[in-house]
Image (cartoon, rainbow, N blue to C red; front, top):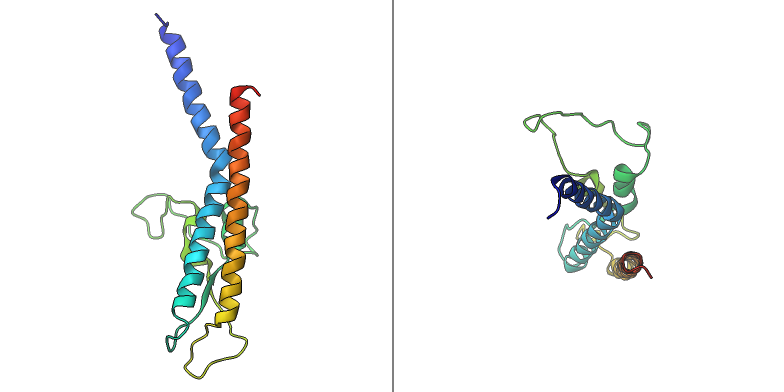
Length: 156
């Protein structure tokens, strides 16, 4: 029979360990989610390459991650309204990187088209290829982190 104090210690350890792992993978989770979102934005541009009046967009990956994880000054970013209750206007419990709309920028075309579409298919395909490579590199990095954790837990 396990004493009650030992059960409390075990529960505490499991809670702390879960929070530590969440913190350990928080940046990777944000990066992978944003990279997936960027792939979707670019593929939407490619899909609308022949839609008259469509404006090409891109996701500013670096600024969204910097808002959430980096040290920023008020000169770098707009001052945000603080809200302390869920009924306040603008209240959000979510991390800043999840507000993808704040990272969307419209692309200025190198050569404007007559139908007011700003998608340049060659540029978008190159962006997509680069984004896929970045995504795969992040995935491999995360796999190596998980592999390292497995080795530590096994005692290798």
